[in-house]
Amino acid sequence: MMSRFAFASLSALLFSATAFRARQRRKGSTKTKQASGGKVVTLGDSYSSGTGIHRNGRDYEGGDCWRDLKTTPGAQYARYEGLEFVSKACKGDEIPGILGQWDEIQANNPADAASGWAGSTILFTIGGNDLRTHKGESWPGLLKSCIMSFYGKCHKKAENQIANFDELQATLTQLYTKIAQAAPKARIRVLGYPKLLQRKLLCVPVPGLALSAADWADQQVDELNRRLRLAVAASRNSTVPLSFAEEASGSQLLDKLRQKARAQSNGTTQSLDASLMQKGSRRRRSRRRATPAPTPAPTPGPGVDIEFVDVKRFFSRGACRVTKRDVHAIVLSGLSLSDSSFHPSQRGYNKYYDALGNSLGRTLPPLFNPPDVRNPDDLMNVFQGWDANGDGKLDMDESLAMADEAESPEVIEQMKVFFSQADKDQDGFLNLSEFEEFMTLVDDM
Image 1: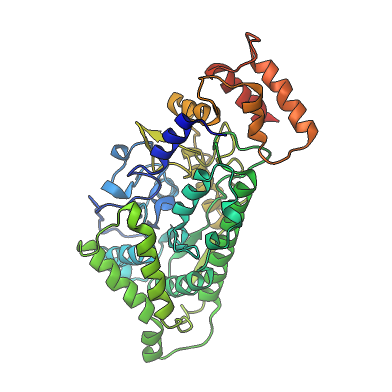
Image 2: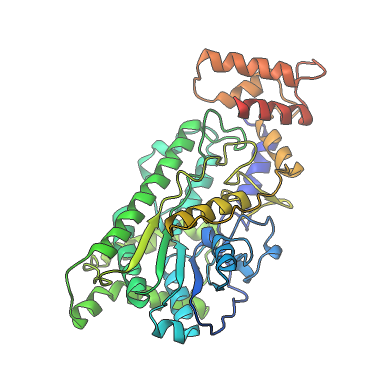
């Protein structure tokens, strides 16, 4: 059982105003220049903007969009190729916002738009923030719910299953086709999402998350990536020529999304308080049911270079690992949960860079991975999460609770051995420094 102190502490963190993907009105924007020879263009959500590279919002550019313009895959690739880098990616953006990003990039770069973006590379992640459960909860909201369930079976409830994979795939097919039509001479790369947890045995850095829920969450990411791949294939392989009138009809959904994006940028759509998000999601879901299914997407034309980039084999150390993570676990910023939580680390964005280079048929120079330095506040948060009675130390039972659902007797015995090894003063308890060694031993197991 969680201690009352740990429960209150983790609750405050998970429901803080900055948790996961809270969106406020945007500040700042990346200025673009006219340049020949092509550009490297990044649009999309937080996994494209660079969220996770820094801990605090003040260390990013683009205001609330949390853009990093130096060490994201697009920025690194542009530097290597000697090309201009343009980024409009924004933390928390859904499809309407990303459509608005593309419209803005088109307007700011008329020469490139007129050339069909010849010589350019366009890359983005999209779709994660658009997922909705049967009860209207977003994907980031669902992660919070599962962590707060404290080993509950949140992932087994019908209301928590993703309800809109089909609709999302159809909408993305339309969006990919629109971008391919506008940029037929560019190399377009739709980047997949990494599995967040990647549990090998335990998941010590995320107290309270059932191990089966961690596996289920990664399975949902696999399904999302499958839908992204299918949408890319549909946009590339469509061979039915459509008249201008048919094309316009097939774009009605995107037109509605574009209008919504413009309304948001004008401030007419206000962000919802976290307590109202579920209610707002129900209203959006109700409107989606009333929207006719989109017509088949028009073909972007033969020879358009658009590909889905599967990053699965590049990311190997998720949030459940203790060291050298490609994806952060719970990250603190002061007393609040940072939006960098469950986002790629710099090491992870370097893996994105490798995957991008592979998809382009390029062997890119290796990037520097920063040293693995454990933040003391993050360590203390994990320690307190496992301290069931709140006495400031972990006993054997509290440590074995990390095994969650019935593990093999061999695993339990090995954990007991690690406990004894880490318990330097042999007092039968682990203090913070001893717990850190215990974590490393378990991670290596």
